Image (tube, rainbow over all chains, first blue to last red):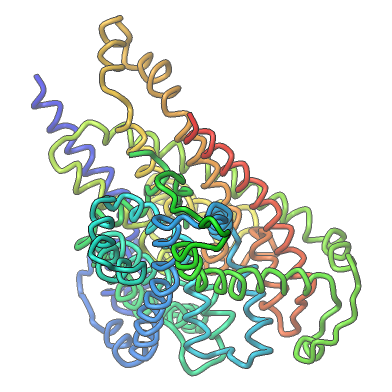
Length: 272
Length: 316
């Protein structure tokens, strides 16, 4: 009785997934389409005469943008962890008075619209002279991840067994030592989750890039794509090829770290 | 793009704070010491930009005074200017429609899919993971892909519509359709989040409740409306409230697909604010910041409501 119903569900599920992922397929399809076939009506459902023109354009023109995004992403991860991990340790294990207020502020900080932060940062960076610099963009991007990181790491570090910390203390380890040699290594999974999201958000950021780095030498890949779209002779195979390449971190993340991704999405919405 | 996190519940042993002579214990100094970086960080990179934004909105800035910092204080003049602007009411309406319609579709599609996936079947875990893809892609990737799919002449959407004898629709170039186009793309991006959160909400429901309902002879439809739906209400409320806060601030998708056009037909507060501050040759930072602040007040209003609902749930 049950088996046919389950096969049926697998088929329907596969069909639904296919519909949902159609735009992703289309992006790949267009990235292989020749310029002269681009305006064909109806469009080809498969890249019948595939071309690598689009990807050649990526190699020729987009590598500097990709490099910038990589640096910005890694820098954002570093800043995020450096600020968030000690804070989470303190909130989770040392419980200072005022910690609740701080957690509340972090929650609110996540809800501030990006455009408002961008305008504030623009005014601030203009005065400081750090517009169009990599450190400036890294710091701005890290504001996307820091509140999330503190809250996730705090939730995780609260669950570290008390006995472990107690043992460290008996052995004479102070707070710093306990944090560095016990809590951080034990929190590896949460740190991975946080790093992946921090990287992905920095990699995907458009609003800070366009306002704070739009006029500089170092521009991230989101601006690379945006400039392509803005060109008068929109080369859609090149645009879509860049989009495919820009999607690689998201794909890698999903393949190697799916459970961390799900953990990050649902963290806190539902009680375990 | 949405993401959620709860305030970690405070519990557990607290170190003795003061000794008999009223000195602060070393543990407490350590606790505060670890919070120094985040406190400075929040003050300099969260609070200060917000403060600058309020300050921008209360002064009459030009490009020159923006650099020199000597713009005259004008009180609420920028806000009055914004309220009186011809864009204000349409932008408010578009923001409301964009948010309400996006949420309605994201939530109902997410819930339907969560119900579909809740009983495991072959490949269900893999398929569920694949559903996350739209949520993980950079917004510029999703937005530009949708822009090309919705292209009037060469887009695949109009090609499909043509097969069944409809269209062509000028999705991005007609004022009647541009708002709907960005809503479609935004729903696509938001479904995975709703699916994942509602799915874990469904999993938290005790199966014994269903068995009891089945024993009482409840049909599948009754089980959903009388058992699942009420039990899922707290999670649904939180999903919707967060969705609301995050949909209000959507900027990338709209700006990349339509720039808020044609003729302002898909302009929301977020894109309007950006256009005032950065989208023109002569920026109007003051009014741009004013629009942004109206947006933040709305978002924070709903955000505080979310915190209340979440707290009440944790207390329960």
